[in-house]
Structures are given as structure tokens and as C-alpha cells.
Image 1 (tube, rainbow, N blue to C red):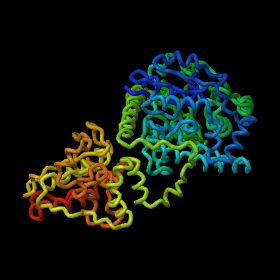
Image 2 (image 1 turned 180 degrees about the vertical axis):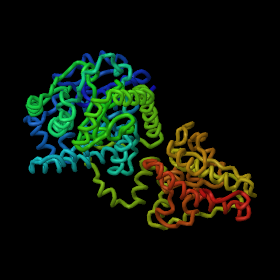
Image 3 (image 1 turned 45 degrees about the vertical axis):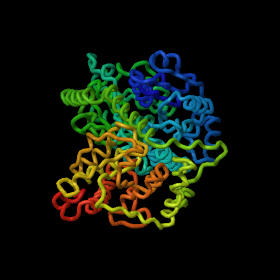
Image 4 (image 1 turned 45 degrees about the horizontal axis):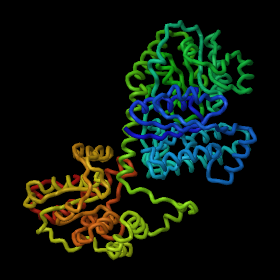
Length: 635
């Protein structure tokens, strides 16, 4: 059981938006097996009391907050403040001192094992690099939404503002992903977009879910010629979609299917939309307690979005109810549905209208699409299934953080170091600072000479080891879940059957958690090389292991320096493994930790390991013995 602190700005009840629905259901599922504390805000239209009743297993702390509305004086003030900072206005307007204080207090008191920042807006109040691991939950790729809004805007001054805003949003989003221990995207497409901005960040995907028992096929008879759209009308992408449908698509539908009706279901429709609806003969319901009756009555469900990000819960809900869906590419972006099998995808107004009209006249085709969509959703996308995936990722985030040194507490008055300054710090000096933080002043002195030699390029790398006398070899990395287990496996394979086959080979981690499995990316990368790490379990480095080893191979200079700092008596037998792969000098001798990369980064790391381990094997067994033992390490 974990203690999860979940921070969500803008309230959760009523769950009348896609983001609120997704967060509510995931929190409810997590609270079945974990201690969840929800810190959120509420405005006049929200109901924090009902939220607490609906989440009986969850501790709910809802604070009053007024988020500035567009065109309000408070929004103008937020816009002015944003123009003087790096934060885009859609993040800056969510800054809340009471929320930030509450989050800091809960973390400082030890009441959380990890913190989830729900939406980018929450990062204004959550310490992403604090004492507990932080997970950023990105329901959308926010900068893409703003970029698409800019592309559709015709007013020059407004478009200029949107151009500035989406670029600030892109930078803010990339910084947040890089600082968070883990970022969650809701589709593979969103994950790839986020990785473009933050290539070193760890970003994983969790699918969207749906309550398949609540959203189920109805016995209600469909109304002939009826078309429906559902969504919050105070969200600009939804309003734009409805206006686009009424202006460019609906007249074409009615030309092909006279008598076709269109109903818009969703909260807070604006004046422009209401006026357009009256002129087009469209029904706008406004807020409803339950969207299912309107969806059940419709023959076709439409998603004519031109702007958006993330994944659309509305499509999952419509398919769960067995509805035939017609959507644009943006509307179905990132979703696991097959066009033509689960829904119809069209972008041009004429083709979109033709698809809707054809379905209105073909009940068998509507039923076939609805049945296929319902089957896929119920088999793979229930909230319980999605929450299990989220739990696994949360557990990995906690374990990964415990395998890493705790961040040094920041001084209140210290200004953040700019990335451009960090890049100018020499690698050797940066390593020295990290080493000092890890092992302390007393131990750092014992390794300072070697580390300084490395920083000046004077390190010899191999030392004076006599391979012929070695009886025990130890590979060491940070967590013993990616690099060192693969190195030990490769050396065992190379020495099998050779004259050096009796050498004891082991691996360990300076900050390993005993019993932890290999990193999933390492397992996948090893599989691609025909090697299995599925049975590996991590081991924390001990003094006994160091004493028994005749040669200890560290993966990078920081590993080696920390080893020497902890065990100065073993300095004569601690070596950089990369120096044995034929690459001498500077960073090329290091086999850097791919922990913050993806599976391809791990594969590249393993390719480097192969050359270095092969060189060690040759030194241990001689060329003749190696030929008996097999091919090169990663052939």
C-alpha cells in the first residue's frame, strides 16, 4: 500500500468534463488499495461535499479558489503577470498559495510516498523535484491545443497572442516533463510529442478508460435522423467543433437526409453558440445531470473537433453505449480504434456530411459499428484495467526514487541555476559536486585525487590489474537494474567453456533495492538481443562483495569515484569498464546510465557494454578460450 498525494486544480465534482471523469475514476480505483489524499479546489459551481461522499476511501482536502475566467479583470491581471514570467497564462492563473502550502506541509510531514500533479496546471503548486517522487499526469499535450487555436484564429492581434502563448506553453511543458520523475500521457502519440520537447524525460502511456456498466447500450428507440454531440461548451475546442459542424457540415447533411436534427449537450454554452444554434435550428441543452438519455436517443454521434489534445473520453462513452460515431482525425487522435471498423473518420466537410447521412439511412451499418466499438471498449478499457497500469507505474516511480540519492534541500533564498549555466560546468566538476553530496566531506577526500585526475583527462582507466590471477569479478552501477546485470550476463556467456570459466561473476548497485526486478526497458532491450533478464533481482553493494572481488568494474566515473569514496582500501582494483572497450579518454570511457532514456537508449548502452565486456573476457580467458566460449557479447 502506498500513500499517494494527488493534486488537481479546478475541482472534480460534478465530473462534467473529460479530465474530471478520468481523474475521478482513477482516484476512486487507487483508493481501493492505497491511501489517497486529494488536494483540490472548488468554485461556486463545484460541490466538494458530494465529492467527499463519492470518494469515501479517499481523504479529500478541497480549498476555495476562484480561477480567473477569460475576459475577466482577474484574468487580465493573470495575463499581465504571465507576460513578465516564463509561465504561460494558462498555468500562471492556477497559482494558489493555499494549495502550495498544503502540498508542502503534507510532503514535509511524511504523509506521502509520491505526488501526482494532475494536469500541467497543477505544477504551479507542486514541487516536481521535491523529497518525494513526482508524477506529471498530462491529459493533453497542452501546447498543441494552443498551437492549433493559433492556426485557426483570423484576428491578427489575437493570433499574435496565441503564437506567443503556445511557444511559452511548449517550453513550460518540456521543463515540467524533464523535472518530473515520470510523466504520464494518455496515448502513444501524445507520449511521442512530449518526448520531442523533453528527450531525456521518462514518459509512459496509460490508456483512457470508461465505466462500461454505466455507459451501456439502452433499450430506448433511436430517433430517426438524430445527431448528437456532447462536451463542455465552455472549452474552446468543443465550441469550435460545434460551430464548425453547424456552419460547414449540417447543411450538407440535411441536403442528403432531410429532417436531420442536431442536439448539443454540455454545460455553459456561450452567446455566440446559442445565437448560431437558433439560426440553424439546433437544440442546445446546456447542463444536464446525465448525458445518456440524449446519446441513447441519437442515431449518430459526431466528434467534429479541429482543435484538441489527449484522448476524447466522449468517443469511449459513445462506443460503450453502442453508438455509431463519425469523427475527424483530431477527434479520434491517439485512440486505439480502427477507422471503418469501430468508427468512421472523415475531415473534409463534404465527406463528413456524407458519412453522417449514409449512417442515418443505414441502421444495420450503425449497429455493426456500435457493436464492434462496444466489444473493444469492454474487453480492454475498463477503469479497473487502466488503474492497474497506473499502479504499476506509480510503484516503479517510488522504487526508482528510492534507488536514487535524495535531492539536496534547496536554500530558500537561492536562485535556480539556469540550464545554460549548468551546461557550462565541466563534467568532472559536476561529478565532484554530485559525489560530495552522496558520500560526504570525509569520504570524498579519499577519492578526490582520482576524480580530479579524471576531470583533467589524466586518468589511466585500467590501472594495474593482472587478469590471470582474477578469481572474482564484480560489475557495479547505480541501481543494478540496467547496466551491471547485463555486463555480468555477457561475461558469463563469453567465458562459458573457456579456461577462465571458473571465474566468479557478480553484479551489484551502489543504490540498489534488494530484490527489485530489472527495469522493464532493460528486459525489452535484452530480449531484442536474445538475452533474458526476467529472472534478475537487484542486490545492494556491500563491503563483503568488495572485499571478495579481485576486480571491480564501474560503469561511469561517478560510480567509480563513489566506490573509492566508500571503500578507499579497494581503490587499486576499481576500474572503468568502458576503458576496456578500446575507447580511451574523457567521457568516451564511460557507459552512461540510460535510466532517463527509452528502450532504444538502453539498446545502445548494451551495444557499448558488449565491446567493453568482450575486452575484459579476452583479458581473462585469452583468444583461444574465447573462441571456445562463443561469439562476441552482443553479436
